[in-house]
Length: 337
Image (cartoon, rainbow, N blue to C red; front, side, top):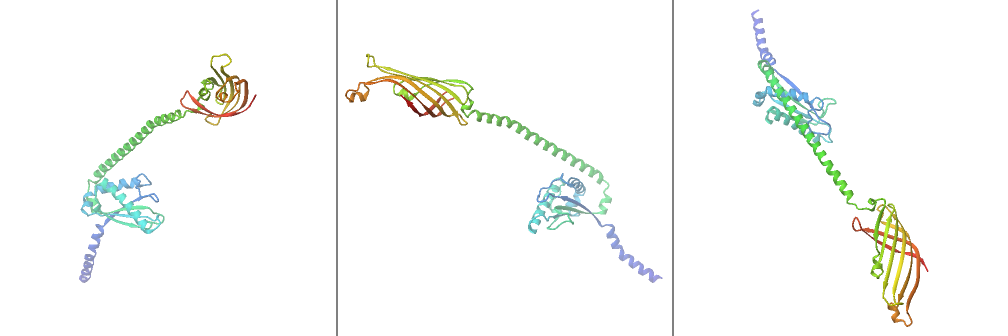
């Protein structure tokens, strides 16, 4: 009997280390963060990332001292299978892991040395890809002995909520500022567009009816002063009437005299109404006494008579200012007597 008791005692002593180890075994806490296919940005509001992040931050802040001392390791694993090669998958997984770690370092007060990182070009589970997992191995005795953890967690949660509200207010302020800038730029764009429209002096901006005074510089150069008017009865149609008159010399029978009347109807064509075609006619009398060839030819005493012609006129009108224009006519095809 004593021999049997001795064997049982030895067996119990052999099992005690395992029992103690099991009692103090760490409890793993797993958090999963999901990423958009082909993107490396960490979107906290996407899927369940926001709730996972807040829970993880609360746990990290509660055990910050133990984590910084190295007693509680923080394992980060990145998984990606959406790229064209395994190397690119591991590179994308590494970038995503760094995004999550940067968020934790900035908001929980831990350091890069606290993390054990690994990146994989495989799925995390069947059909689950593009994720980063964070695992904390927290000894059970730490959770049981720290009675003030709920208060600390509540305090950290309030800090997180305040940070979220501050971020939301900042985003709202940025949106309002962008909207104000767009509203301020809108009148400037409209004014610029209107100014560009006003800078295009096209005849289409004419009034429906207008009356203009005109002359013929070519006739004026040959000492045949000309004065006329044009009545634009519409954008496309104009009525013109010119009169020319010259009287040079004073002796009876030796007067250089010419007078002409030139009516014309014009049709202004094309979009800008500068090119025109018209029907023109002339009538007048002349008395030209011994001009230059008459002095060279014996017996030439001059010319005297009446003239008339009719024809088709083509031309193009150039605008020099808003109130004046120059016309370049093509001489008409005429029939005269």
